[in-house]
Length: 286
Image (cartoon, rainbow, N blue to C red; front, side, top):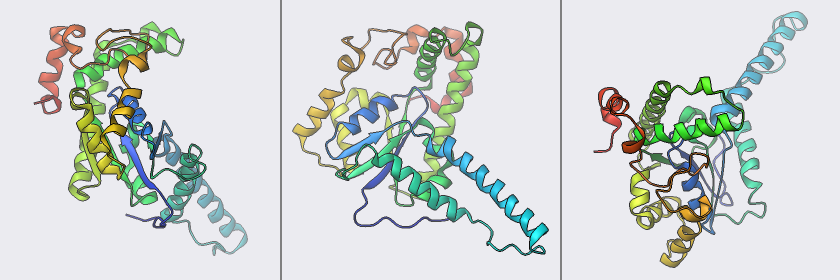
């Protein structure tokens, strides 16, 4: 693994939040961002979208240098071949600049981004930020599927998708795929770099928000004063975020659909629920 320059004493702690799409990562982002010592932005798509574009540009530039070398410099390029470490350095500068836009005075102790697929390229992430902390939020894949149903309804309403695109069976497989990929990435980090990643479950965050939020703050080195944590939690409760609905009051047209776990029991047919038992039992809560 290549490494970017180490952080200086003046740098904040950089962190990245991951989780299957529609697993509660936006609520988690807001909880962290509500802490006065942290800034958590989203969604930067730095390592699932931006880095591949930079890599493509690097490859095209490298080809151009080689072409000039062959045509002009007798096959001996003036510039040395590009190294992955240079891409890592570029990514660090770019991402840091983007993150600091919400903390221009540099007051945050912890600075991070929530993009569900931050786990997509962990090699690239740690190449740019070898000191980074990760937070993974997992969720029952059956509830992920139900939330994806609502997400598709909103896309159709906004004209971003068509009714013909709403394939429930395909969405079930999408939920399984996202959850499986996220868990696999988390387990790799837990094995190779113990202590770097914090594993959370959406169901636990709902059931014991204070206790799980305290774990998050400990992982990021933030002040864990109980009064401060309760204030941040109150600022991000479901009723406030959803415009007045109580948890369980479902609205498929809202990004915050229901604010509870176990909705799959009412929203999935028995045959649909059986797909998860049959194809992904390892992902289901024990």
